[in-house]
Length: 448
Image (cartoon, rainbow, N blue to C red; front, side, top):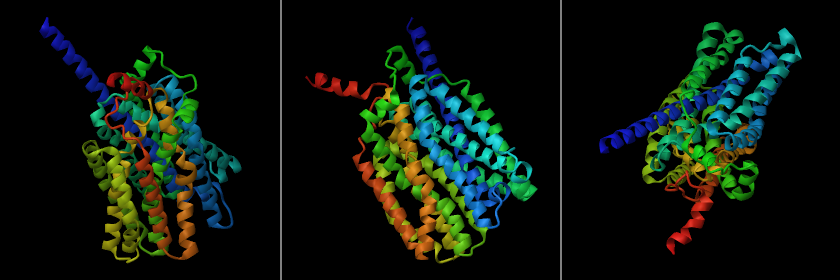
């Protein structure tokens, strides 16, 4: 009898471990696809889309119009967070995540076959803008689903370790996007080569969907269904009852996202246009940095479970405040070796904040509206940080003709994140399967 019970318990444990592995794999691939498409579109918009879809007498105007469609994707993310946050807390993490992935994959694939201005006139530009809007809505709902699929299957003591896989997708997606675009445009030319990386999204979606079919709904959401704890309006509940966590989570992202765009997109433009360095060399340096960043995220995510996730975010934000000025000091030397050091070192320092961020934000919200709250906290900065970050950086550079204001801008954003981290409640040891308000109410009774 005892042997039978032991075998049953081992089988359950093995099944749960298998589900966790599948959930982590599916989540990592899904989030990588989102970032891949994100950077892919940004790279294409800056290089080729303006000329093909928004022809104008001034090439700068064409590029600016193409980049405007890039911003449309940012603006749509909070809307996607609201829509899919509601669904994620109502119908489940897995179903909602699958829907967002299909939406993003379909839109990205269609971008790859969109007709240019020469083929369809203004219709091509309108279609491109619409597809970018759909991409943004899907991306707004995907991140929280990926994170929760992993965290809610895992153990509370390993949430930093599990959450790092979703954060790993940022440098991974960047490397894949820049690498594939370089490969296909060098092989087939810009006018044709830019399409194939977008079409490649379809294959990535197929792989992610195949893995996801074997993943069951998370135990946390299943328990909520069994106990009939599903909220009718989870987004409204999250906003009204945990607005402080949404605000602090959004501010936490300010000092992480701004440096990332400055270190990857702005730096490429700054190195080539202002410092007159070889563009291919600068891009190669950034690709090397993404490889180092992948290793850094793995390390910092593991370490966050040991030293504390909130504490590591604070260390990272403080390090970024200090690093912002030396980074540009090294770039401005125009020495190839020192520029390499600046670019490669920048992302691991950034990753001190990024690696534990998924767990910090997700565990801030109680289960009944965790998808909604996490989505809003993560994507609200898209309107004030993600989209405007590059515009602000370039405006400061051209307005003052110096990199110092940009360094100050990065430092101030990091300081905002440091202050936000100080205000966030540390829920490292909190049981995510138990509602936080119920745990708080039970505490006095247990003490009595």
